[in-house]
Image (cartoon, rainbow, N blue to C red):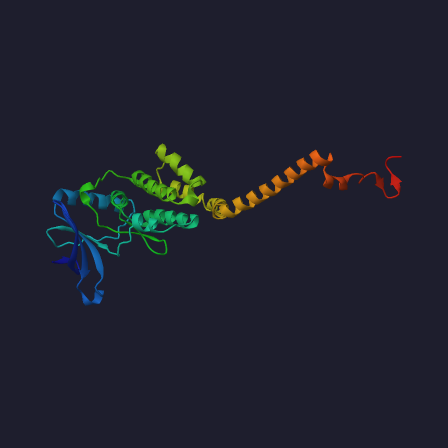
Length: 283
């Protein structure tokens, strides 16, 4: 299927989603000058959904938030064309390996920055966060995909809803990173979420940034704990040997006291301070 999306001719090569309201495709440009560039194509078939989406789009523009999507004219269906990148879902690739405190902090900060700088209207950003459209690169940078189900679109969603959802994602990431378990920032985020205390992304930024050096203290504790855990067998053997040695000495002292009436090796201390130089302390 070929779509004429404005100046772009898009060949739909993979259907991602279809319902009574819309279709989502991964499409490739057929123009030779485009080098086969890929896009996410959303085709809205329901006029009510298209009308609500237009309102969301216009409200976002009035707030100075400019989407990376395009709305080409000239078709009966309402279309949106977004950039496409190969998926690397955050919820899958973050937990595929053990992360350090520093990496966790960087990823959380990158997620926050992407939310702030994306330019998407708040209802669209909320769908991105709620529908697992957040992805992570190998260098820990974050990017969004736009394979969205618009049946869940709510034009009343604002910044507060988005920042609370983002904070919950950040908390989930921190809770699954051992080095971040007792950091100040994580505890603050948890307490504020219980009170629904975020209204702006700047507030969440401050709380995440509060852990800039705190994870290092936790890291030292984790290293000591890991060392003791790894050397546990050796430490137990050393303590056992010392205990046996002290036990043998104790038995020897008891037997010496019973047989000789004193402890022989303690005699070396007898009379040590009776004479200092040529002077006797007993005179």
